[in-house]
Length: 99
Image (cartoon, rainbow, N blue to C red; front, side, top):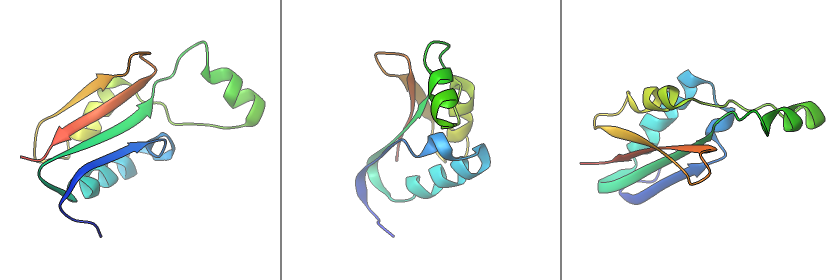
């Protein structure tokens, strides 16, 4: 397993993980960071104008998360975390810094 990395970034993985598994994965990924390293975990937000078409046309089902659910992912960490949105407000990021 990797150790002492500066950045762990994930976009597109957590949209498939149930909450309990996502929390365990967040904790494991955080353990890879060096002191001062940063964790960024992205997850899509359900929007009325986009998600139905993907799900209906291709049977592609994602796990969309709310801001509170993203905060809950970070609740397993030994440090404070924050949730930020991208410029489109269609993706939330959990951000935490080790130490």
